Length: 155
Image (cartoon, rainbow, N blue to C red; front, side):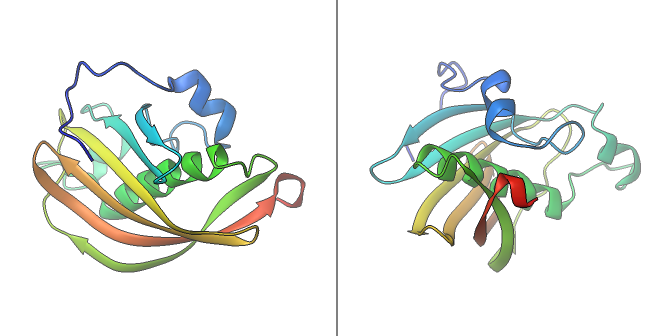
């Protein structure tokens, strides 16, 4: 991943993301995609966090932090966009497993959460992505996520 500049043009805006992912508010956790390399394959997404997020109201309200499981979900959704763009457009990536998860730094209101996923295995049945979420130069979460690919009409 290259150094990220918040002025980087948007590759996929929220309208395009909504065409790809089945999630909707409050469970759509990716605001935009700013980089993608289908040869590597890798993707960089972004989630802008404000105090208006529902989870901040109840997750340590006096010292609000984003729940780690929601950061994992945001990483999985970013990986799902990569899977779609790798050509699995008739299927949906379903979250299957989490391995080697490390929660390193809290994510707070006002943060820009960068969501990086790199594909390690892709097949017609599923695969795996290595992920990392950062705020600035600080790693918030690292994990390897597994997914199953299911035809949309089977859900």
